[in-house]
Length: 378
Ligand SMILES: C[S@@+](CC[C@H](N)C(=O)[O-])C[C@H]1O[C@@H](n2cnc3c(N)ncnc32)[C@H](O)[C@@H]1O
Image 1 (cartoon, rainbow, N blue to C red):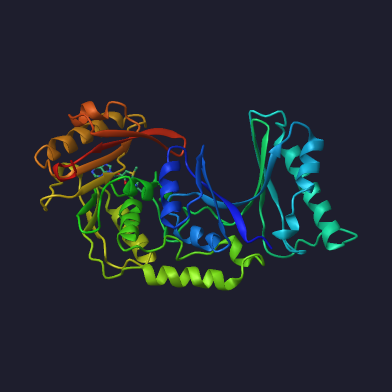
Image 2: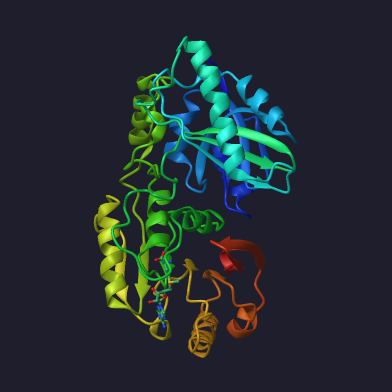
């Protein structure tokens, strides 16, 4: 059984450094940032801890091996040479998924079936099985990912993606992924003792993620992970990780977090979601249109994901909304304002150049994160 494992925390494009910072905060030092992922070496307890705590990563994968491959033979032989039996028990289910980018071996279905055959052959030999593998046991989903002829073979430890925290009972038309919402909060200098407002809260993702961060609640506390079923990880490591999370949570931390939305139905959904997340009435929810918004405290943070105005007939209205926000915030220079949008005219409409901009993706939509530092942040 391996004492050390190499883990890959996958990340949305543009968020790699945020994920890396989270991995380091968990105490792991050997951290490398790559395109779309963060790689680190740690002991087995890092699997439960990373799944429970990483707020901005998409998944945690265990690296089984990597090599160069330009022929199916090379792919087969090198996959078979990897110690699959160290990770997967005799009855483990091993579906194989794949992707290939800019590589000689471009047919993903062929790569998947070759990898599957190689794993099965290896496991049959190691476990002394004459016929087929039962695959009736715990799920070990393998992935073959080839990029520029470099093949990586991983096992997914997460199960469903880490954005599935388990609190979203309802959503609006364009909900933000929980991992991106957490990243937006982490990219601010907000501290839990400052007011926090999302004026376009929709189903409440940003305020809920802020509250989880503010009270140091592990985002994975309400869900299960594929690797909980694995023989590889003694179950006490999961228990230790859950106990650590329970102890780290600071439910007494007072917070001033508010979500507004023009749509009363969204406010009801957001309130339901916050209850589901175990936050009770911690967050204030209120129906309000941006035109009527007025900060009530001397300083604080606004983090918002307004409509982008990409739909037909919506542009003018949305642009007016950006103008309204800029106009209101002119009178509150100590407040910090953070807005994501794909609208490239945002700064012009808002009436001020951002202190900082960061390119991100909301799904496949290219967006900018416009950051206006309040006077207390400068
Ligand atoms: C992109 S969605 C926000 C999604 C949210 N981040 C989530 O995860 O569910 C934009 C929200 O802005 C709200 N909105 C539209 N016009 C508004 C206005 N004038 N004032 C306040 N909210 C508005 C919409 O009702 C919608 O819920």
